[in-house]
Image 1 (cartoon, rainbow, N blue to C red):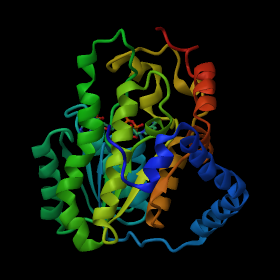
Image 2 (cartoon, rainbow, N blue to C red):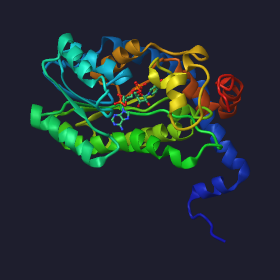
Image 3 (cartoon, rainbow, N blue to C red):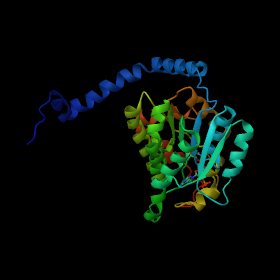
Image 4 (cartoon, rainbow, N blue to C red):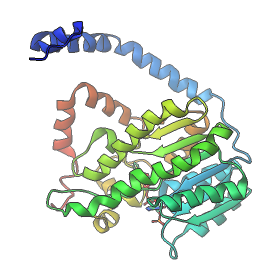
Length: 323
Ligand SMILES: NC(=O)c1ccc[n+]([C@@H]2O[C@H](COP(=O)([O-])OP(=O)(O)OC[C@H]3O[C@@H](n4cnc5c(N)ncnc54)[C@H](OP(=O)(O)O)[C@@H]3O)[C@@H](O)[C@H]2O)c1
């Protein structure tokens, strides 16, 4: 029988000492939690007064900017004087051109809008190349494009490939082509993951998985690109956009919804959320969670997973789903 040659092996192979070591790490964490809370408060107050990047004349590329958070982030960057490249997929009925017009009105010196599918590697290369051709530089890449879906074991499993393709690969491809340009400008990557990737709500299925994959990929990527490039991972709760409406989710692959999520669960306004994101990114945040109370849920999930599963099973929108 194989025996671990290390001294730790002896602890981990024994049921009792294996558990004891876990509690030996957990206990100080709980004892120090009041100090961690104070530290959290200090860093929050610091972030309110920290220096903000001047976005005037900088170049920001946003995917999925024809509606929702992408559109509102484009307006927020426009107000700060950034040049924009905005990307979405649905030509010809897309609102992308109107978004470009409004961004110019709000103060953006120049806006380029492009139709492309982020899940296609050549199209991702194309819009990054077009950005450099037009502006000669790239300062922020905002990987925001994404689709929602609810999964049930009764659904045809093959219908969910686009969720992974768009939500995961649709961020990774543009990131891959943008990194050399961001390295030159000391730029930033913003990736719109989700609290779903941390909290794993029921029926989230492939949506949760795609967002968890994003968090994992970009957490690891930061070690490779820092300090030249800063990565901001967004783990948002429910934000009032199309994506959480019964109409949207009933047309998407998977389980339909009877009620809008905003009618059964706490949600945050999309404009307030977009402002908080651009503000946080401009101040150099490496992760942003909005609404902020979601962070408490992350702690509960990691410390007390059974409690987390209990309230999810009690509360999550089982009241509003059809099957
Ligand atoms: N709303 C929430 O509660 C919430 C919470 C956490 C995270 N998020 C994330 O936030 C991001 C934005 O979502 P949203 O809530 O603002 O929803 P939304 O209004 O539906 O926006 C999605 C955007 O992505 C674009 N898009 C979809 N597939 C694309 C593709 N293959 N190629 C290029 N663009 C594509 C859409 O363009 P077309 O209009 O051309 O299809 C649209 O502009 C998503 O990644 C979502 O997962 C949302």
